[in-house]
Image 1 (cartoon, rainbow, N blue to C red):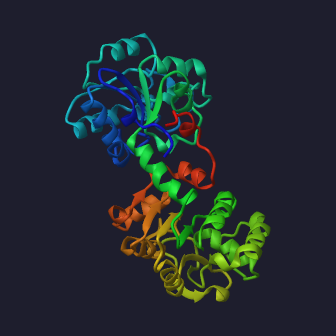
Image 2 (cartoon, one colour; image 1 turned 90 degrees about the vertical axis):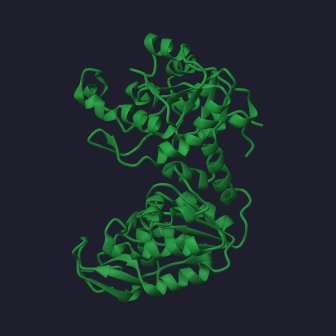
Length: 398
């Protein structure tokens, strides 16, 4: 990675302003999954060990209406980072002070009074409309709280916001360890992949992933296509997919990709089909060219999984983004879970894009056996497309 990290600068006795991704799932005012908070711990702990104080900023959810922003409104509490600060405090084993906002005189006073080893959590950056507009006045006010900026929020690196890109214009800006790890492993897939390199793409739509399909095809040895995307490719081959999800507007795109890269693509040959899109549907396993009227493809079948296994055998690098079936319904999750287990048993470097793929390996119980599970769904997809991420571009070069 050609960007400076927090290891490359002196932070002793300095106030470190750190962007983290604490956009965590919440229910009844409690954090229901602390994975993203835990992911930020190594960088936070390193800064504290080096004698710095740490000021954390993050967004949470999408506050939109006036009542979401009003400090006296009970609705605002559902977007507050207070619950995340409490979880962090218990994980660190030390107090985490909670600011009433992310800017303002009171917040500035709290930041300036921090002693080495102390932690301050700022309130949700999206309580200010200027955050998503990358308002430089807001960025300057945020930057005034710290002396060094550390970006450890890979999940937000694809957005040029005040707390990700704007702040870096006013402070020395470096990456944290999570950001470094993300760029290292995802970078392998984009820059110098080891071969054989097998990429796996799932999810519903081709249109969401057309750029990543083209980028991966230029680099990988084989591209496994599953999920709703596969239906469109199969339909483009002239198969009648009946009631399966098909993206009609992408059929021509799929045909073009098939014409240029057919030898690299691995498409389903059989399917778990259902008579309705529901958990209690009747199911059957059929070859993809034998789906009866009124039925739809919901998961890949056993012959397809055997083809996946053959393709993955001997791979040096495997990158996976998107489930190969409707894995939210247990009946149609078996293909995705079987694929996750194949990756867990592989000797290859296994890189899992964030979002649904990360959820899938976690649900399959094999997340710890992967080389790297990304914390950023949208960010990992854009990175794999070969795009420069604004939050990364803003960091100092080595």
